[in-house]
Length: 187
Image 1 (spheres, rainbow, N blue to C red):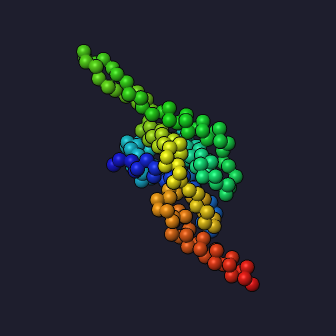
Image 2 (cartoon, rainbow, N blue to C red):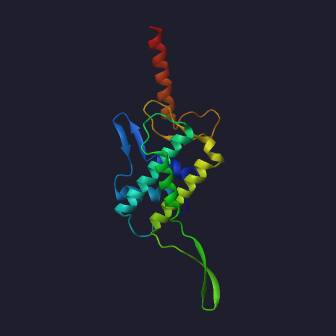
């Protein structure tokens, strides 16, 4: 299975932190959670399970992408998890783990090989970092939005001119809150 379109995977990674009436939730609490997320977005991890270090790396990547998305969208809903420089450093550092094509000489012939020295999970996360850079620093960044529905902490891609929320549920919550405020102010 191939990975999802490039703008979707970083948004899906950011959505592993979400909120509801009972508080803030983290979908990357355990190594099994990371394995499930990797499978869900189509990142090959081989037969092995992710390690504790890879889980920590995925969470660092997610926090960095969320911080940078907040910068791109001028989102001030919550205090910054990371300093901007730290988020940039974490994202840029992870991209260096991508395999680099190399030319080798084997049995009298030149052939392309890869400098793949990292695990498939780290390589997959490095690809997500590269896609995050393309999203946050490219033309698609103009479509990235923070969802301002009451209690929401998600980001989404504005795929329609009238879209203002990450989901129908958030749109309903925002309209209900607006209606409640209108009735309350009329009293």
